Amino acid sequence: MGRGKVELKRIENKINRQVTFAKRRNGLLKKAYELSVLCDAEVALIIFSARGKLYEFCSGPSITKTLERYDRCSYGAQEGKLAGNDTESIYQEYLKLKAKVEVLRRTQRNLLGEDLEHLGLKEIQQLEQKLDSSLKQIRSTKTQHMIDELSLLRGKRHCLKKTMN
Figure 1 (cartoon, one colour):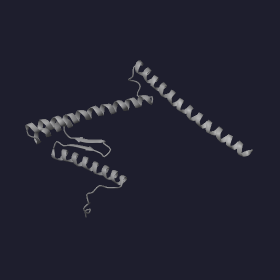
Figure 2 (figure 1 turned 120 degrees about the vertical axis):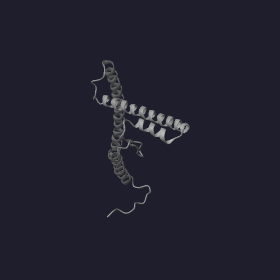
Figure 3 (figure 1 turned 90 degrees about the horizontal axis):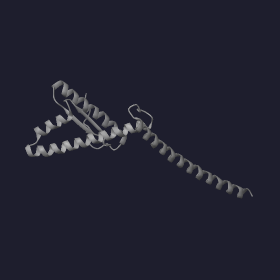
Figure 4 (figure 1 turned 180 degrees about the vertical axis):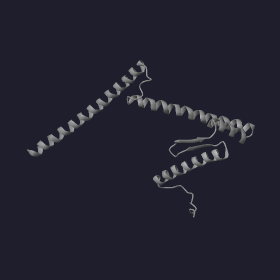
């Protein structure tokens, strides 16, 4: 006994939509893997979530090689060159963004005091200066908040004294 036919329309509930996305994405990735193993097919699958997160699967040596093969097979000579350049430039942009994300993650780990073994003395000193500068800014903001709170409390005390007299 199978399920009934599902009406294909956008799921309005955000949580249900996310759950459905995760389940169907995993199912699609599993099917791509199974197709590649059972049929010895070269499969490439690219999924971007609504939030822009990338999910990918490639049964071949690399997704770039599979995309190049796709370009050669699916377009004529002129169209293939244009699409290949577009695909290549998009992939290059993806690689640059991926590298930037890794640099940001490494910097974040460094700022948290983790993964410092690979840093040289100069980089550690620069990191220390950044942290000192941040700490000064934080302390300045904290001091200002405390001064504002003290001023507010003095005002309340003054009002209380007036009402007591």
